[in-house]
Amino acid sequence: MKVALVTDSNAQMPVVLVDRYRVDVVPLIVTVDGEEFHERVDLSDDDFYTRLAGGAAVATAAPAPGAFLMAYERAAEVGAEAVLSIHVGSNTSATLNSATIAAELSRIPVTTVDTETASFAVGCCVWAAGEVLGRGGSLDEARQAALQVAASVGNVFIVGALGLARSGGRLAADADSGEGAPVLALEGGQMRPLARVRSDADAVETMATYIERHAGGRAQRIGVGDARTDDLAHALITRLEQGGCVGELVRYAIGPSVGAHTGPGTVGAVFFPVG
Image (cartoon, rainbow, N blue to C red; front, side):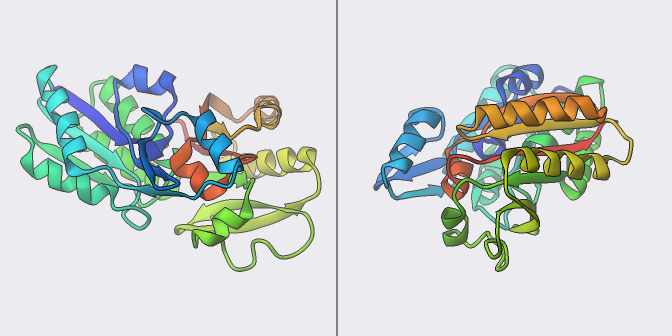
């Protein structure tokens, strides 16, 4: 059975993975000063962060069901017999609801997956499902792989704009108390502090050590993402490659649907075991 993969733009999928697994990415709606845009379609990352820095009011919203139905139709038109549609968690977004409505109207069967996570952690679920389908696995095997990663995927990051995270209700109560910048992990829909650091070098070392400790000697698939913090992202990549836990590493940009809650200056990594 030929199975197509669909996700939403909150997954922050880099081109290398989109192309490898032929993923159809449905854009979320990003509102900037009352004007609606489709993430990375008619609103670039640079334009978004420039306007955010200028004080623009920003918000995000789920795609309409029709946007997902069009994606499922595109899959059918190129010969897919079924769709595996993997999405940002229903605990943080109405996106899955839109996908579910569209699935009921699709002319080919659609299986939706609620990852109960966000950002590139969703992308990791797609990555895992793509690996299964790529080696000839079934739709259900791919779905199970996505769910397994969703339940165990790790993440660690620093936020450029704690005020945005706080106003969005995603920052734990004690995350911005104390000296230094917090190193965070997204757990249960909240950004929780792991440590506090006083320099970029300390941030890189803390994040890399956290990943290596959780890897437990197993090779990891890792995504390193940033929002206008290119040098810091490169430093983290270099440190991880020196540490020996990298099975495969991809770089992704933190786009508007995530950056609206974290701001420029954010950098971090998402990871899960190979195999």
